[in-house]
Length: 294
Image (cartoon, rainbow, N blue to C red; front, side, top):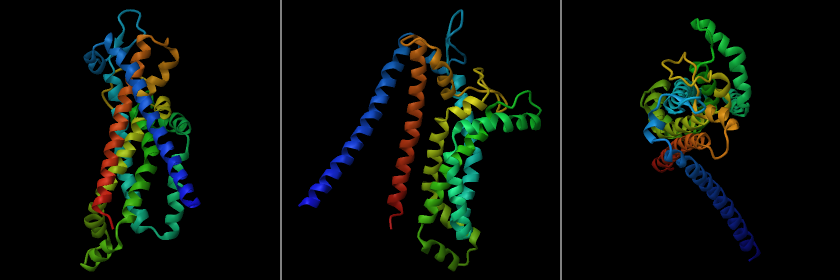
């Protein structure tokens, strides 16, 4: 009887924690929604989402277009994924099926430690070492651009993709490997034609979670992206992602002003983007679990 009462208390405690977390998330969303949507009483949605110029503090007519900010965010995000996806999947394959146990036990914690490096440190590395190197290699006046930010964010995304992909590949039944090799497949054929297709939904979920991580990154892109509000035309142009724009301008605005509300509208756009990415990745993971449940 006493044990049942204790278990019931533990269940109620965790239920309370879960409901609290959900209420906090809902509260954040409604605060962003309430504050951000007030922007559209004074600025049309077409101007806000399709305008190419963001200049709320102009002496003349202010501009409220976030298209250049969205473009900067997408360039840094997908540039980071172009770097992180092949490296992450290759590393996961090496750790799960090629590396010796001693090497695996050394490399995996080292890779996961990258996630613990503060983003400001990686941003500092981008400013002091990577950006001069990029400028020298490509003959640029400044190395603070979308390419430098993509490399830095790609490094930050790598632990997520590697860790989840390696866990998915390791969780596949050993019978998959044994049956493939018994049919005469080489180790590479076994990986390419058996393991990767079976683990594809889990790997896709890892990529989606990495995407959410890249979209929400602030400090590294604030330091290494160049902070230009102009519409970028290539990865060698400086950009200002939405997260960096909020971090730069929120301290300068008057609470309750249109500028203040517009920044919260940008935050609402980011919230919806990251929530959608995480929601889709959760669906993919659950589908993978149901498909390969043993």
